[in-house]
Each structure stands twice: as C-alpha cells, then as structure tokens.
Amino acid sequence: MTCLETLQAYAFRSLGYGERLLPRSDFTLCDQFVLIGSGLLWNIYFGLLAIVAGFFFANALAVAKTSARPWLRRPANGFIFVFRGSPLFIQFFFAYFLFLSLKSVSPVFNLLSSAWMGALIVLFLNTSAYSAQIFYGALCSIPKGDIEAADAYGMSGWVRFRRIMWPTAMRLAWPAYTNEAIFLFHATTLVFFSGFPAWRQQGDALYYANYFADKTFNPFVPYPILAFYFILLTLVVITVFGGINSYLNRHLPRDRRQKVKVRPQLIR
Amino acid sequence: MRPAIFSFCSDPASLDTVRWLTCYLSTGKHMAFYMSFATVLLLLAITAPLALAFGFGGAIAARAQFAPLAWLGKGYIAIVRGVPDIAFFLFFVIALDQGVEWLRHQVKCPDWDEPIRQGNDFIVCSVAKMPLNSAPQWMHEIYGFTLAVLTFAIVFGAFAANVLYGAMRAVPRAQVETAEAYGMNRHQSFWRVLVPQMWLYALPGLSNLWMVLIKATPLLFLLGVEDIVYWARELGGSKTPQFTDYPHPDWRMWYFLALLIFYLAFTKLSEVVLDRITRRLSYGQATVAGAAQRKGRGKGPGTGSGNEKTEGTPA
Image 1 (cartoon, rainbow over the protein chains, first blue to last red):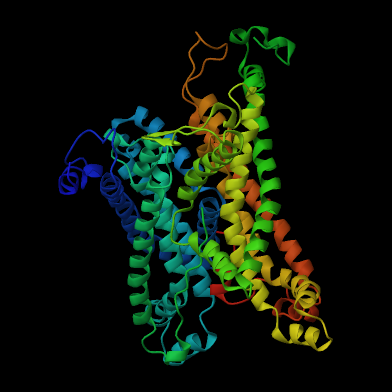
Image 2: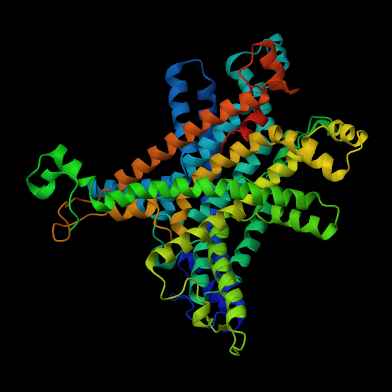
C-alpha cells in the first residue's frame, strides 16, 4: 500500500470507518503515523468534552465549597476529596464495574458501559474535582480591595459575584487551569487500559501505539510517534488557553499579567 | 487444596453469612491479595529514595557549567513534559528489558553474526536472555518488579529533578555569596550551604510528588506485576461452584471500591504527616510560614495566595 492508500484506509479507523482489519505485518512508518493519529481523535473527543462540561460543574463546586452553609460545603468537599484523593486508574475500573452491574439491573444503563459514554463521565467528574480545587483557591485569593470597591459601588450578591469576583477568580486561576487541561488530555490515554473495552479495536492513540509495540516488539518507533502527537496537542492547548489568558488579563499593565507556565504533574 | 486457616471452613456451603465471609476472605488467594498491598508499599519504599537520587543527579546535571551535561539534565527534565506519563511506563519496560538483553548479548555472544532485529522479532542468544529461560518463577517476578521500580524511578526522577532544580535556585543568592566570601569554592558552597537549605524550598513540590507517586502505583498492573489491581480483577470475577468452594457473582465492583478506600485513606494519612513535617521544617525559618509561627497565629504553610496553594497541594 502506498501512504495515500493507508491514509484513506486508516485515517478514521478509530471511529469505525475504512479498513476493518488492522495491519498485521510489514508495518510501515506510514501505517503507524496514520493509525496512531487516528486514535488521537478519541483523546481529543474525551478531553474536549470533559473540559467543557467540567468547567461549569467545577465552578458550581468551587462556589459550593466557599459557601458558609454546611449542607452545601460538605458535599462539595467530599466530592473533591474522593476524586482528588484516589487514582484515576482505580476510578475508571470501579466505574466500569459499577456500570456493568447497573446494566444487569436495567437496560437503561446499557450506554454507560461503553467507553465513549462511561469513561467520559468519569473524566468529567475527575476534572471537575481538580478544577474546582483550582477555582476554589482562586476565589479565596481575590484581593480584599476588589470586594471592598464592589461594596462601595453598591454591588452585592449575584451582581458582585458576576461582575467582580468571578472574572477575577478566572484570571487568577487560569495558569493553573491550563495545566489541568493538559493533564486531562494526558489522562485520556488511560481509558482503554482500565476495563473499558475497545469495541472492534477502535481505540485511542496509546491503544494503537501499544498494539504496534506488541506486534513489532519494538517500542522505539510507536511511542515516539505518540509523544510527537501529544506534544503537538499540548502546544495547541497552550495556544488556545494562552489566548484566553491574555484576554482575561487585557486590562492589566503588561508587567502584572500572569503568564501560563507548564508545570507537569504526571498521573492523577 | 490449601488447608484453611479456620477449622470450621471445611464445608463452606453449609455456613452462615458471617462465617462464610470469614472463610472466604482467608483463602490462599486472598492472602496473596493482601500480600500485594505489601508489594505496593515496597515499591513506594524503594522508588521514592531512588527517584530522589535520580532527581538530584538530574538537577545537578542541569546546573552544570559543562554545556552538554547541562543539556542532558535539562533534556531529561523536559522530555517528560507534554507526553502522557503512562506512555513512558509502557515504553520503558520494554526498552529497559531489551537494553539489558542487548548489553548481555554483546558481552556473552560476541561471535553472533545474525542481526538482533529480524522483522518483527527481537532475537538475542539464549544465554543473554534475562532472566534465563531455565530460571525459577520467582526470578522472573523479581526481574519484573526491578524493571517496574527502575521505570518509576526514571519517570519520577525527572519530576523530582524539576522540583530540586527550582529549589536550588530558590535559595537566596546572598547565602551562596556569603559562603564564597568565606573562601569556600564552588564545590564546598554547594554541599555545605546550598544543599542543606534547599530542602525547605523543595518540600512542597516533593510532597506533591509523593502524593502523585502514591496514585501512580496502580499502574504497576500495566507493567505486568501481580499487584492489587491484578488480584482485584482476578478475585472479583464471578466464580462458579465447579471451580471453587466459594461461588459468587461478579464482585469486582466491591473489590475496586475497597481499593478506592485504601487509596483515599493512604493519601489522607500522607497529607496529615506531610503537613506536620512542613510545619516542623518551617519552624524558625525566614519565610512567611516561619514568621507566622513566631507570631503564634499561623498553622504553618498554606496561608499563601490561592494559586500557589492549588498548585502546591497534592494533585
């Protein structure tokens, strides 16, 4: 096969389009690049949806955590503790088997045990907890003067939160939140190694990289390809989040703006 | 059949729930399950100092004046960024294994003329196999565990190097200048002044790393070690009366719930202990936390700005 044919056959293999059988022998560099890139679509899918949905839930959780009312604060604290205090890998396993037993109770839950739904839910809850902790920290570190100024203008309650507290908190939280987004994309590689089955060999980038490493017994080609793709993905995330960051900081003098710094944090 | 620990376990089918559970939870396989918790703790106990050593080496290399060495150190730190960590785990286990076998092959079979990579196979002469095919099972297990420890140490070493490199630069410059004014050379001022002082600055990052390390231990499963995840899957799966005295439906959910609780308890405990150490180390130091302790109002660190806190607290 030429590389163009490979591209046609395998570019969307991870979604179930194109050639049904994976390449079995004579793996070319092109095969590996195309198939691993195809798997990356799943990583983007999981990461993007979890980040977007998690952002809203995390904000709600962070506000609940700052609340003076115990019936709001305690559940938020507990939720954040459970998801931040245990490994994501174990959370995936537990959730998968929980979904399996739910499935045997009622067919309503059938969808949950498939990776695209079940793993997305776990990732969503997980990133919500981590982001909520970041937002909570930011809400706690809003300068006192800002709040006093808002009070002096006669703002209170929802208006004060929406116009003063929330934008400031987002601005303060954004560098840390950028890191959270990067780690979330990295964490999506765990999905197909933690119980959730890859239906008809439709897996993510690491799934295919592992497939090639197993078949060729040569880890020195597929994993660097995977690394290449993820470095690209990380750069895209940094660019997008950096753009939002400079938007959030647009009113500040240049030397007081916070820069986004990548601080790798490894496995969650 | 292994002899049961409790005498009343000879006929499990006739027992009531409590006794049945007692017998069930004390079978030989469950003992192996409990032992695998010790495996995890052993891994942590070996990996943590080893990763710290790797990190220290990496940080020193990154600070070196000799440019290629500095590139090596910085490259080691930087390469872990941007790439999913689990990919490193999967990569290093095979790469290390093949590296060891390749080296042994070069030493033991110098007149071997065939290529090592033939198509999809990696072929070394049989005396270069690691461990040898004839080796007993425990040798294979020890070897697998050693590879896992090395992998963890390499990956976490890069992170520790990042933390230590930052901590070395955080020590006030005046301290080193004073050391130089006393006539210490570069070597002396590094070991006598910089290193003893940097630990305080490294502690938040290192305690963060410890929490991350705890949460990385289930990945042992991917490295082929029979760890708690392996046993939880193994024991939890549904069992029919044909193969066991203790038939039960699919209980994997409950086993993983137990693991979840184990990790929650472990991270909570670590958090409390690390908090105490930080408070102890800040005592009398010229930092915000130290000053707060002197005024008698502070509870130690963690009263800083939100951003620092969220990044400093365990992930």
